[in-house]
Length: 330
Image 1: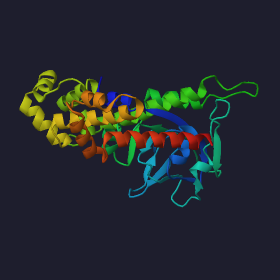
Image 2: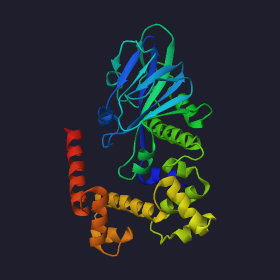
Image 3: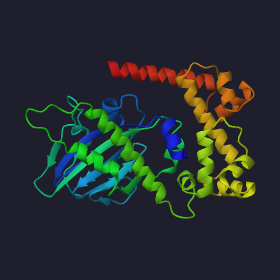
Protein backbone atom coordinates (compact mmCIF):
# COMPACT_ATOMS: atom_id res chain seq x y z
CA UNK A 1 0.00 0.00 0.00
CA UNK A 2 1.24 3.52 -0.71
CA UNK A 3 1.82 6.03 2.08
CA UNK A 4 -1.13 8.30 1.22
CA UNK A 5 -3.56 5.37 1.27
CA UNK A 6 -2.16 4.13 4.58
CA UNK A 7 -2.45 7.54 6.24
CA UNK A 8 -6.02 7.95 4.95
CA UNK A 9 -6.87 4.49 6.27
CA UNK A 10 -5.58 4.96 9.80
CA UNK A 11 -6.89 8.52 10.17
CA UNK A 12 -10.40 7.30 9.32
CA UNK A 13 -11.38 9.45 6.39
CA UNK A 14 -15.11 10.17 6.38
CA UNK A 15 -17.10 12.34 4.01
CA UNK A 16 -20.54 13.83 3.53
CA UNK A 17 -22.25 15.74 0.75
CA UNK A 18 -23.75 18.90 2.24
CA UNK A 19 -25.04 20.98 -0.67
CA UNK A 20 -26.48 20.17 -4.10
CA UNK A 21 -26.91 23.64 -5.58
CA UNK A 22 -28.21 25.28 -8.73
CA UNK A 23 -27.14 28.95 -8.62
CA UNK A 24 -28.28 31.69 -10.97
CA UNK A 25 -26.20 34.84 -11.44
CA UNK A 26 -25.83 37.05 -9.58
CA UNK A 27 -25.08 34.94 -6.51
CA UNK A 28 -22.53 34.64 -3.75
CA UNK A 29 -22.23 32.43 -0.67
CA UNK A 30 -19.91 32.92 2.30
CA UNK A 31 -18.42 29.85 3.96
CA UNK A 32 -17.04 30.31 7.46
CA UNK A 33 -15.91 27.76 10.02
CA UNK A 34 -16.91 24.21 9.11
CA UNK A 35 -17.80 23.32 12.71
CA UNK A 36 -21.48 24.21 12.19
CA UNK A 37 -21.69 21.92 9.17
CA UNK A 38 -19.90 19.17 11.04
CA UNK A 39 -22.49 19.16 13.82
CA UNK A 40 -25.18 18.42 11.22
CA UNK A 41 -23.43 16.11 8.78
CA UNK A 42 -20.41 14.59 10.64
CA UNK A 43 -21.19 15.15 14.34
CA UNK A 44 -17.88 13.98 15.81
CA UNK A 45 -15.60 15.53 13.19
CA UNK A 46 -12.92 18.03 14.16
CA UNK A 47 -12.74 21.03 11.78
CA UNK A 48 -13.36 19.06 8.60
CA UNK A 49 -12.08 20.22 5.25
CA UNK A 50 -14.63 21.36 2.66
CA UNK A 51 -14.50 21.06 -1.10
CA UNK A 52 -16.66 22.27 -3.95
CA UNK A 53 -17.03 20.47 -7.29
CA UNK A 54 -18.42 22.46 -10.22
CA UNK A 55 -20.65 20.26 -12.36
CA UNK A 56 -21.81 22.90 -14.86
CA UNK A 57 -21.18 26.60 -15.37
CA UNK A 58 -18.46 28.49 -13.55
CA UNK A 59 -17.75 30.55 -10.44
CA UNK A 60 -15.05 32.34 -8.50
CA UNK A 61 -13.58 31.19 -5.22
CA UNK A 62 -12.16 33.87 -2.92
CA UNK A 63 -10.06 32.78 0.06
CA UNK A 64 -8.36 35.06 2.56
CA UNK A 65 -4.83 35.92 1.48
CA UNK A 66 -5.28 34.49 -2.03
CA UNK A 67 -6.29 35.97 -5.37
CA UNK A 68 -9.72 34.89 -6.69
CA UNK A 69 -9.59 31.65 -8.71
CA UNK A 70 -12.08 30.83 -11.46
CA UNK A 71 -13.56 27.33 -11.44
CA UNK A 72 -15.13 25.78 -14.52
CA UNK A 73 -16.94 22.49 -15.22
CA UNK A 74 -15.03 19.60 -13.65
CA UNK A 75 -12.93 21.84 -11.41
CA UNK A 76 -12.81 21.23 -7.68
CA UNK A 77 -11.51 23.47 -4.90
CA UNK A 78 -10.47 21.98 -1.56
CA UNK A 79 -10.23 24.30 1.44
CA UNK A 80 -8.64 22.92 4.60
CA UNK A 81 -8.10 24.16 8.18
CA UNK A 82 -11.56 25.74 8.22
CA UNK A 83 -10.37 28.75 6.22
CA UNK A 84 -13.15 31.23 5.50
CA UNK A 85 -13.87 31.70 1.80
CA UNK A 86 -16.53 32.76 -0.66
CA UNK A 87 -18.02 31.30 -3.84
CA UNK A 88 -19.60 33.75 -6.26
CA UNK A 89 -20.69 34.42 -9.82
CA UNK A 90 -18.88 37.78 -9.62
CA UNK A 91 -17.00 39.82 -7.03
CA UNK A 92 -19.88 42.24 -6.44
CA UNK A 93 -22.76 39.71 -6.18
CA UNK A 94 -25.04 39.91 -3.09
CA UNK A 95 -23.92 37.48 -0.41
CA UNK A 96 -25.77 34.74 1.48
CA UNK A 97 -24.49 32.49 4.27
CA UNK A 98 -23.60 28.97 3.15
CA UNK A 99 -25.13 27.53 6.31
CA UNK A 100 -28.49 29.08 5.41
CA UNK A 101 -28.54 26.95 2.22
CA UNK A 102 -27.11 23.63 3.41
CA UNK A 103 -29.74 21.27 4.77
CA UNK A 104 -29.53 17.83 6.31
CA UNK A 105 -30.70 15.06 3.94
CA UNK A 106 -34.42 14.36 4.06
CA UNK A 107 -35.58 10.73 3.90
CA UNK A 108 -32.26 9.73 2.39
CA UNK A 109 -32.15 12.47 -0.26
CA UNK A 110 -29.94 15.56 -0.45
CA UNK A 111 -32.59 17.99 -1.64
CA UNK A 112 -31.38 20.26 -4.50
CA UNK A 113 -31.56 23.99 -3.77
CA UNK A 114 -31.93 26.92 -6.15
CA UNK A 115 -30.54 30.32 -5.25
CA UNK A 116 -29.63 33.63 -6.84
CA UNK A 117 -30.90 35.50 -9.88
CA UNK A 118 -32.02 34.61 -13.38
CA UNK A 119 -28.62 34.85 -15.07
CA UNK A 120 -26.08 32.22 -16.09
CA UNK A 121 -26.47 29.07 -14.04
CA UNK A 122 -23.88 27.15 -12.07
CA UNK A 123 -24.40 23.66 -10.66
CA UNK A 124 -22.09 22.54 -7.91
CA UNK A 125 -21.86 20.10 -5.05
CA UNK A 126 -20.16 20.86 -1.75
CA UNK A 127 -18.85 18.16 0.58
CA UNK A 128 -16.97 17.95 3.84
CA UNK A 129 -14.24 15.44 4.67
CA UNK A 130 -13.01 14.60 8.15
CA UNK A 131 -9.64 13.15 9.14
CA UNK A 132 -8.73 12.07 12.65
CA UNK A 133 -6.02 14.10 14.27
CA UNK A 134 -3.13 13.89 14.99
CA UNK A 135 -2.70 11.15 12.40
CA UNK A 136 -3.75 13.39 9.53
CA UNK A 137 -1.16 16.05 10.37
CA UNK A 138 1.37 14.87 7.73
CA UNK A 139 -1.27 15.52 5.07
CA UNK A 140 -2.70 18.75 6.44
CA UNK A 141 0.67 20.27 7.25
CA UNK A 142 1.83 19.67 3.68
CA UNK A 143 -1.18 21.23 1.93
CA UNK A 144 -1.86 24.85 1.04
CA UNK A 145 -5.08 26.35 2.36
CA UNK A 146 -6.74 26.09 -1.06
CA UNK A 147 -6.16 23.43 -3.71
CA UNK A 148 -7.65 23.62 -7.20
CA UNK A 149 -7.85 20.34 -9.10
CA UNK A 150 -9.13 19.52 -12.58
CA UNK A 151 -11.29 16.41 -12.13
CA UNK A 152 -12.54 16.19 -15.71
CA UNK A 153 -12.42 12.52 -16.68
CA UNK A 154 -12.36 11.41 -13.04
CA UNK A 155 -14.64 8.41 -12.40
CA UNK A 156 -15.31 9.67 -8.85
CA UNK A 157 -16.53 13.06 -10.10
CA UNK A 158 -18.65 11.40 -12.79
CA UNK A 159 -20.28 9.11 -10.24
CA UNK A 160 -20.97 12.05 -7.94
CA UNK A 161 -22.65 13.95 -10.78
CA UNK A 162 -24.69 10.88 -11.70
CA UNK A 163 -25.80 10.34 -8.09
CA UNK A 164 -26.90 13.96 -7.69
CA UNK A 165 -28.61 14.00 -11.07
CA UNK A 166 -30.94 11.14 -10.18
CA UNK A 167 -34.43 12.61 -10.42
CA UNK A 168 -37.51 11.31 -8.70
CA UNK A 169 -41.01 11.31 -10.08
CA UNK A 170 -43.82 12.35 -7.78
CA UNK A 171 -44.54 8.73 -6.92
CA UNK A 172 -40.93 7.62 -6.40
CA UNK A 173 -39.31 7.25 -3.01
CA UNK A 174 -35.67 8.31 -2.45
CA UNK A 175 -33.17 5.59 -3.31
CA UNK A 176 -32.27 3.31 -0.43
CA UNK A 177 -28.76 4.01 0.82
CA UNK A 178 -28.59 7.33 -1.02
CA UNK A 179 -26.92 9.28 1.78
CA UNK A 180 -24.38 6.50 2.40
CA UNK A 181 -23.59 6.44 -1.32
CA UNK A 182 -23.00 10.20 -1.37
CA UNK A 183 -20.77 9.90 1.70
CA UNK A 184 -18.56 7.32 0.00
CA UNK A 185 -18.48 9.39 -3.18
CA UNK A 186 -17.46 12.46 -1.18
CA UNK A 187 -14.53 10.45 0.21
CA UNK A 188 -13.54 9.27 -3.28
CA UNK A 189 -13.63 12.80 -4.70
CA UNK A 190 -11.54 14.05 -1.75
CA UNK A 191 -8.94 11.34 -2.42
CA UNK A 192 -8.93 12.19 -6.13
CA UNK A 193 -8.23 15.86 -5.36
CA UNK A 194 -5.29 14.82 -3.18
CA UNK A 195 -4.00 12.40 -5.83
CA UNK A 196 -4.04 15.05 -8.52
CA UNK A 197 -2.31 17.49 -6.21
CA UNK A 198 0.42 14.93 -5.52
CA UNK A 199 0.87 14.20 -9.21
CA UNK A 200 1.17 17.92 -9.96
CA UNK A 201 3.99 18.37 -7.45
CA UNK A 202 6.86 20.07 -9.36
CA UNK A 203 10.31 18.54 -9.64
CA UNK A 204 12.60 19.67 -6.86
CA UNK A 205 9.76 20.45 -4.44
CA UNK A 206 10.04 19.59 -0.76
CA UNK A 207 7.59 18.44 1.88
CA UNK A 208 5.47 15.37 2.53
CA UNK A 209 3.47 15.68 -0.71
CA UNK A 210 6.69 15.94 -2.73
CA UNK A 211 7.99 12.88 -0.86
CA UNK A 212 5.03 10.81 -2.06
CA UNK A 213 5.92 11.75 -5.62
CA UNK A 214 9.58 10.73 -5.28
CA UNK A 215 10.45 7.24 -6.45
CA UNK A 216 12.65 6.31 -3.47
CA UNK A 217 11.34 8.49 -0.65
CA UNK A 218 7.78 7.54 -1.62
CA UNK A 219 8.62 3.85 -1.36
CA UNK A 220 10.31 4.36 2.02
CA UNK A 221 7.27 6.25 3.31
CA UNK A 222 5.00 3.45 2.10
CA UNK A 223 7.07 0.84 3.93
CA UNK A 224 7.16 2.78 7.20
CA UNK A 225 3.45 3.60 7.13
CA UNK A 226 2.50 0.08 6.05
CA UNK A 227 4.52 -1.61 8.82
CA UNK A 228 5.23 1.01 11.49
CA UNK A 229 6.11 -1.64 14.08
CA UNK A 230 8.87 -3.13 11.93
CA UNK A 231 12.44 -2.76 13.21
CA UNK A 232 13.35 -0.36 10.42
CA UNK A 233 16.84 1.00 9.89
CA UNK A 234 17.96 3.31 7.11
CA UNK A 235 20.00 0.43 5.68
CA UNK A 236 16.98 -1.92 5.71
CA UNK A 237 14.77 0.69 4.06
CA UNK A 238 17.43 1.38 1.43
CA UNK A 239 17.65 -2.30 0.51
CA UNK A 240 13.88 -2.50 0.14
CA UNK A 241 13.60 0.56 -2.12
CA UNK A 242 16.69 -0.24 -4.21
CA UNK A 243 18.83 2.73 -3.19
CA UNK A 244 22.05 3.17 -1.24
CA UNK A 245 21.85 3.93 2.47
CA UNK A 246 23.57 7.30 2.26
CA UNK A 247 21.65 8.38 -0.84
CA UNK A 248 18.28 7.55 0.75
CA UNK A 249 19.18 9.34 3.98
CA UNK A 250 20.31 12.46 2.09
CA UNK A 251 17.28 12.45 -0.20
CA UNK A 252 14.87 11.98 2.69
CA UNK A 253 16.33 14.94 4.59
CA UNK A 254 16.39 17.07 1.43
CA UNK A 255 12.69 16.48 0.72
CA UNK A 256 11.11 15.97 4.17
CA UNK A 257 13.55 17.97 6.28
CA UNK A 258 14.36 15.15 8.72
CA UNK A 259 16.03 11.70 8.68
CA UNK A 260 13.91 8.59 7.97
CA UNK A 261 14.05 7.20 11.50
CA UNK A 262 13.15 10.56 13.05
CA UNK A 263 10.10 10.66 10.77
CA UNK A 264 9.22 7.08 11.75
CA UNK A 265 9.48 7.93 15.45
CA UNK A 266 7.12 10.87 14.98
CA UNK A 267 4.61 8.71 13.11
CA UNK A 268 4.73 6.02 15.79
CA UNK A 269 3.95 8.67 18.41
CA UNK A 270 0.92 9.81 16.40
CA UNK A 271 -0.29 6.21 16.25
CA UNK A 272 0.28 5.96 19.99
CA UNK A 273 -1.82 9.08 20.56
CA UNK A 274 -4.69 7.45 18.68
CA UNK A 275 -4.39 4.24 20.70
CA UNK A 276 -4.40 6.17 23.98
CA UNK A 277 -7.80 7.63 23.11
CA UNK A 278 -9.43 4.70 21.33
CA UNK A 279 -8.22 1.71 23.37
CA UNK A 280 -7.90 0.72 27.02
CA UNK A 281 -4.38 -0.61 26.62
CA UNK A 282 -1.80 0.38 29.19
CA UNK A 283 0.67 3.16 28.51
CA UNK A 284 3.49 0.62 28.83
CA UNK A 285 1.97 -1.59 26.12
CA UNK A 286 1.46 1.35 23.76
CA UNK A 287 5.00 2.56 24.49
CA UNK A 288 6.35 -0.84 23.45
CA UNK A 289 4.43 -0.67 20.15
CA UNK A 290 5.95 2.75 19.53
CA UNK A 291 9.45 1.29 19.89
CA UNK A 292 10.28 2.50 23.42
CA UNK A 293 11.80 0.17 25.99
CA UNK A 294 10.49 2.16 28.96
CA UNK A 295 7.35 4.12 29.73
CA UNK A 296 9.51 6.98 30.98
CA UNK A 297 11.32 7.43 27.65
CA UNK A 298 8.00 7.19 25.80
CA UNK A 299 6.38 9.76 28.10
CA UNK A 300 9.27 12.18 27.58
CA UNK A 301 9.10 11.85 23.78
CA UNK A 302 5.31 12.08 23.77
CA UNK A 303 5.32 15.25 25.86
CA UNK A 304 7.90 16.83 23.55
CA UNK A 305 5.57 16.31 20.54
CA UNK A 306 2.12 16.79 22.09
CA UNK A 307 2.87 19.14 24.99
CA UNK A 308 1.58 16.83 27.72
CA UNK A 309 2.31 13.32 29.07
CA UNK A 310 0.39 10.31 27.67
CA UNK A 311 -1.89 9.85 30.69
CA UNK A 312 -3.03 13.47 30.62
CA UNK A 313 -3.52 13.34 26.83
CA UNK A 314 -5.71 10.26 27.23
CA UNK A 315 -7.79 11.80 30.02
CA UNK A 316 -8.34 15.16 28.31
CA UNK A 317 -9.10 13.63 24.91
CA UNK A 318 -11.67 11.23 26.34
CA UNK A 319 -13.29 14.02 28.36
CA UNK A 320 -13.54 16.15 25.21
CA UNK A 321 -15.10 13.22 23.31
CA UNK A 322 -17.69 12.73 26.07
CA UNK A 323 -18.53 16.43 26.11
CA UNK A 324 -18.94 16.42 22.32
CA UNK A 325 -21.32 13.47 22.61
CA UNK A 326 -23.40 15.24 25.26
CA UNK A 327 -23.53 18.41 23.13
CA UNK A 328 -24.78 16.47 20.08
CA UNK A 329 -27.53 14.74 22.04
CA UNK A 330 -28.91 17.83 23.81
